Image (cartoon, rainbow, N blue to C red; front, side):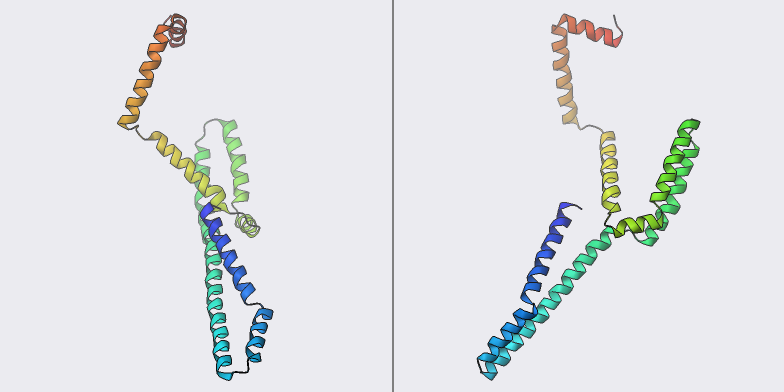
Length: 194
């Protein structure tokens, strides 16, 4: 779970605790007893109305907290339709890639791995893992997103300023190598220009 979600859940927990403390049966009973002790009917009615209004406000707050918790849980849960789509799309696509593998040993190894993945991607396994708190979107989706982002960024052309900076570094290193005869000889050997 990312930091923003953790913070949101912590804030919801604090609000839930505050509401629970304010609305315990003992706290409400004490307020009512102290109001009745005053023996002023008009004042008693106003204060009882305030208690009722506060209870209604807290009830609405509790409904909002429950909806926020539910929304957070729903955002982490993979639905049955999503599971079905993943298994009917991903598995056949992966099998096609494996079939294209020319090396028989590698193909067998990849097929073994796919069999393990099939077991993990079954509806029953995903449902059980989600019930015990496993978050597939966080565990698989976020790292996969980061991996693909880094892959795309690595294929992007370097901007002109970065290219100039690298050229300066390359030139400086070339000058340093040229100053050292032993380093120059080693570089020529590495390049195959003895």
